[in-house]
Image 1 (cartoon, one colour):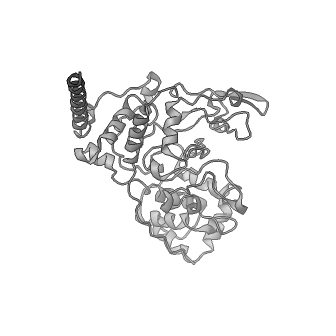
Image 2 (image 1 turned 90 degrees about the vertical axis):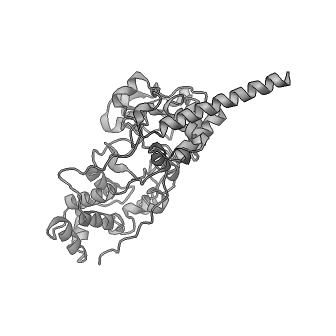
Image 3 (image 1 turned 120 degrees about the vertical axis):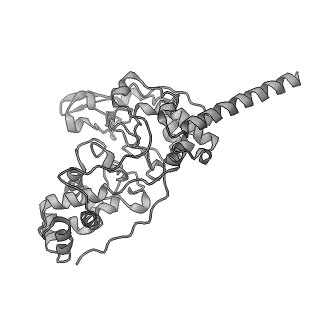
Length: 371
């Protein structure tokens, strides 16, 4: 009997070893067409692109990249004089030492007001097709003005902010180098900050090295996590492409409609009833550096996040509807969010894989603010 059990265990180990060796060979081949086929819902296919390297950053034709413009944008990004109080800069909520966010559930803004959503990292924001959790900004140029004017954030006005910057003698040279003359305008401020933000992107991760042929850089758990990500866990329905996001909006059942914490999400932008409770699908690169997670910063560990999806987030029925401005809205959770029943080992393996998407933080030199 013991011999039979021993033989069975050895056979199982051999099969598992062979399976992992084959996965390692395929995923590290440098050719994603050889990878196992991903498991996707039909609704995900129109927005699907295989995971892989980040593509080259694209700059808009009306705001091409220049080193001088990016330097001006970086300087403005760290300058608190864009705010009404002269104390809050873009970098106050998007700190390079904290994954270009602030590690808080909600950020502090003007007069220590607390924001209503978790501050998203600007890492790789240049790959997003819309900005903020609700997608209300259609470009980084558009986005860069909004925190300046938000009464909870910098509580300024973009025209007044431009006037303040124009009075600072030291900015004249920076604007002249970036745009050809010394004129300061809200349009130039927005373009400069956006140009800088497009330079804030991930370097080469262990994932990138692995799929390029460094087969032994992954542990077996990281390898299995990658495979689960693309298959059983069905993460690829939303988190695809080199950015690890399909740039769509999904309702994962976290809007808490009918409670004091309710957030109507995308509906506030589109006014479409079907968008109630939808939020932008974030990219997963650098995810270990950008917690807490979700639009309300409600999850503090990656294990918690993965368990949330494994259980399919069974929403509380009393937090699925609300009346907003006389309109009844209901939370219709995405069909992508359903019971997966992942084992503890599989949850651990998925987390191990996600950690390979993060890179070592680069030292960011702070600009000298003009006087």
